[in-house]
Image 1 (cartoon, one colour):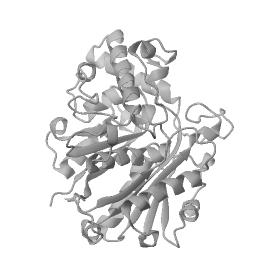
Image 2: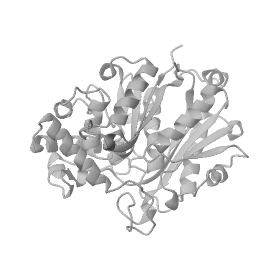
Image 3: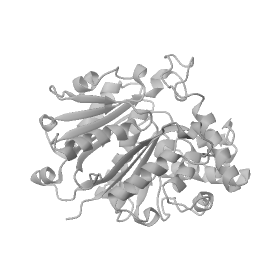
Image 4: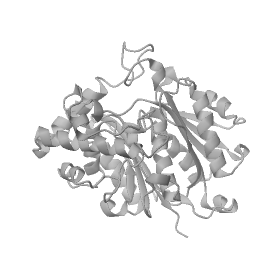
Length: 400
């Protein structure tokens, strides 16, 4: 049986640009900015980097079909650069490549970087066929709001939750993330909203209103990883370790069988179960200190609380309304504003989540710092509930 990579790899540096409408920067510019911050944070020269993974979710508005533009932008001298595309899980999958390379002994210092220039499509949401100024790159049938609205209806039907109560919980999710983003200078959307704002907003796909949908942004993020031994040789003492990193991809079961009722995301449950086993976590609701999850829509965050085992089945609405996942709750979620307000440049999102966990565990999250965090969890969901790839990572301080 595989033993996993727990505590075999540490993060020694991370960088993340300000997300938003970055009209004055190309994808290469944003990559360089994030990489420069990561190098400065790690305190290493880029000549030590011996492998890199680059995540880009949508080719036509980014860097093209290879890792070459990334290698040129970052000035990596004949270093192998692997381009990764895995929908919204691309950033975490790039991180997985870098981490596995170091854990296997194939690399001493590896980089994972992610970037996206979504605003350049000229369309307000994720690009879909015939819309915007660029050709459609997104291969999933239907619109993202429409697909996740179906998740909301299936969830409410499965658990007998009245529409008004579900809407109230979804509004709370969004209000919470907007409040958290006010303390994050790199977030795209930093304006507070009220429950009334969320509940009375224009409808996008029933029951999802405008404020139930995440921001579409430009952005980039980067991580540098190595072994604990090499990190100590560099004089690093408080090491942030990868405890677990798991992906699960739909194999067609959701659409081929009648077993799945559409009220949850199976790949998230599978990836979480594997990650907890790898990290040695038995009670995630108690052991995880804070989480960044894939809140592309408020319903996704709510359902994910159950899929990750933070709430009992059918109880996430109650827990959300009780403030369990607020900044001062028992398990803060989206403490940096999440996809909802930090923004969602697809290739960068997974690494942005890891960036927040890294800052929190290093005690460097400034006004949004959580007290004495032990484990930070990140979760990405690429695709749609019925065809998805889920990524779950757990990081924490390396025990001496």
